[in-house]
Image 1 (cartoon, rainbow, N blue to C red):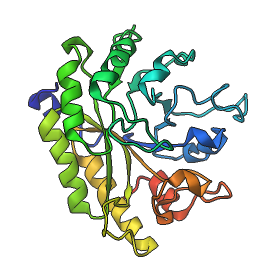
Image 2: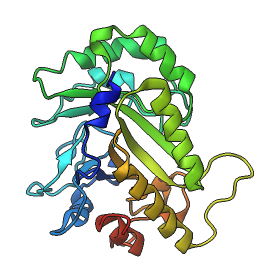
Image 3: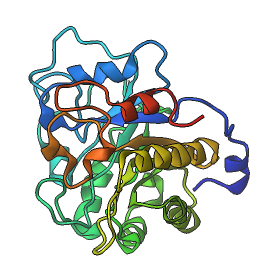
Image 4: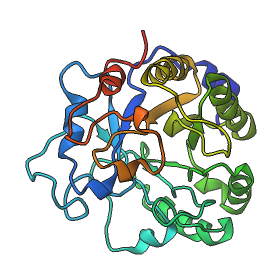
Length: 272
């Protein structure tokens, strides 16, 4: 776990925290390149999969180049042994997606006890000093993570904590992340967030300007907070199905594959 001094020594003004989440179900990574045009302040991308190019993303142009870091993910424990290795050049590897949540479209519910053997196998893939693991990202169960951390051997502890935050106020956004930080004291990668709540009776955004404002507040805080290592807004896709209930106002790309005004705000830094 990171010490308070190590976190204090981080440069809060270091650029390059923001990235793009792109659903592998789109079957191509070609549209991702639009987010990394000259002048873009985005530096990384991920897609809930091990590969951004090749047979797992079969409609991607063979000659596609994206000038950004790709961070692979093992979406669920059984995919450790699916026959697909990691593509060369990776430095971070993300763990399982919302293992505390049952929704076949986005997650495979798995107990911490069933998940940790696959995690130990993932740790064996670290063969270079600069390769690191990122924890599983839960849908909201801190208890799931606490049990998982109690089961895995100390030498396999992740270097970073993955966090998903879906809320509609800046105050609850900050409070949620601070709770994770206070509990685990690991540098955080907020790999999914948007102006959306899945709590009953909590309304979504009422207009597009609210989301522009929310993005401005949250990205500013993320950029200025020392223990935030990276983050990625949820809303980069063409097919509305891949929003999985997140309001359309959060879109970074429209159905025709064009960057939205919110997408341009994000590309340009998210905030003033």
